[in-house]
Amino acid sequence: MPWRHHATVAEAYASRIASGELSDDPAQAKLARRLDVLLGEVGNRRLAKKSSALGWMFARKSKPGKPPRGLYVHGAVGRGKTMLMDMFFELVPAKRKRRAHFHDFMADAHARIHAHRQKLKAGETKETDPVPPVASDLIDEAWVLCFDEFSVTDIADAMLLSRLFEQLFKRGCVLVATSNVEPRNLYRDGLNRQLFLPFIDILKDHVDVLDLDARTDYRMEAATRLPVYHRLDGVDDGSAMDDAWERVTAGKQPAAAMVEVKGRTVPVPRAAAGAARFSFADLCEAPLGASDYAAIAGRFHTIFVDHAPVMGAASRNAAKRFITLIDTLYDRKNRLFISAEAAPDALYDAPGGTEKFEFARTASRLNEMQSEAYLEASRANQHVDLQDQA
Image 1 (cartoon, rainbow, N blue to C red):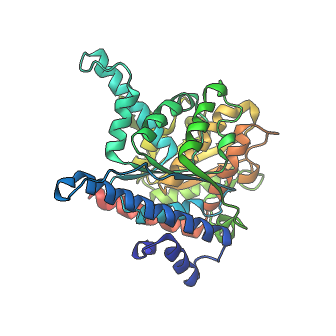
Image 2 (image 1 turned 135 degrees about the horizontal axis):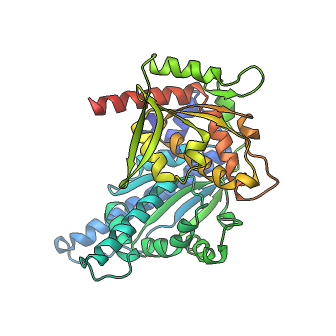
Image 3 (image 1 turned 60 degrees about the horizontal axis):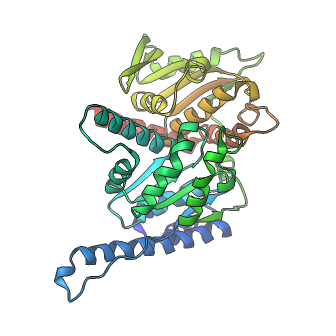
């Protein structure tokens, strides 16, 4: 990543403009400068912590002040939010930092809470409330947290967020997050939303909210169509997916497989040569979640999904799972082959609701996952995975 050679996000951004990779965008440049302010504040806090820890070397100890306010950046899909946050993450001078997809972070938090409760049940701890010790463990590992695509669609996440982040912020967490929605629209129309609302106030107390109003969807601008997204119509009845499967697996005989996830198994109908093939129903109509999709994405570099239907209010649960699935594969740069009844932008058809709002990101990512740049990143990621397994 070329921006690693620069001292600030603004410098890295300007370098990519000079090289022709990006076009100058005033909104993006403004966000880069604001991220640089936070870079400096994090660096100063880190130095203050060191001075406090080594205060015996000096005439007096200095106490680190309040942690700097984080950033919550929202805006339409494809405007460069994630790109700029990733620049910040690479440059931020904190050793204990973590960049994660929001769904993965929450799955990790739930798993830690479950493990604590098991310890309590076994008599290995007397602390009945698992949230404070889990928050302490998370902060010990990373006090600067960067979340890509902050969204809340799961009631279990919604109910945990207020208590967890109250504890994280209390312990000095600095949060940088990107989202397609402003905070007040998080978990909109969600079940028992009134129990979630305190989190929005906690969030606003610890982050500055910025609207990235960039001028265009850069994913669509850069997309070069490649045959990985197949429309099911009178011409293509699914045979194009079969041809692609043969090419990817080099004709190797597929076999059923199993992926282990926290003591249970997720069936894989067909697998060969590092690729796995599922129907839409296998992945999105079964009771699967973010941890299941992450395990599948970690096991296979290429995922085939057959016969994705047009979704709507009547299939909102399947749509929510599909959103999570695409987020997971996109974040890990897995290659995706998919056959669907409609183009990405028409794959969700409903007059409103949270899923329609969230699906705009999914459609944009499905478009980007067809681009040459994304597929090149997928190939590079596949090469790294193969080296790790060697």
